[in-house]
Image 1 (cartoon, helix red, strand yellow):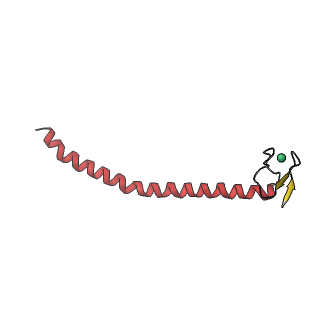
Image 2 (tube, rainbow, N blue to C red):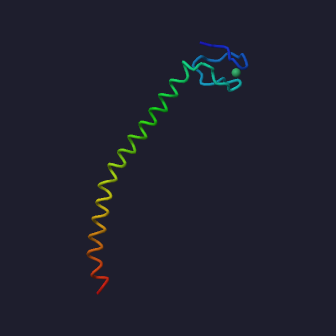
Length: 82
Ligand SMILES: [Zn+2]
C-alpha cells in the first residue's frame, strides 16, 4: 500500500524504511520503532550470550596455557640454569 510522504508528499510504500524520493523516515513510531528496538535488543542479547560463551571458553584455555607454561617453565628452568 502506498502512503504520502510527510516530507515531499510523494507516494511511498507503507513498508519502506525511508522515502526513496527525499530519504525521510516515516513518522510512525508504532510501526517503525518496535522493529528497531527488538532488533537492537536481539543484537544486545546475542552479544551478551557471545561474551558469556567466550568467557566460559576462555577459562579452560587459560588453565591449559597456565599449566603448559608451568610445565614448560619447570622443565626449562633447570636446563637454563645448568
Ligand atoms: Zn519523501
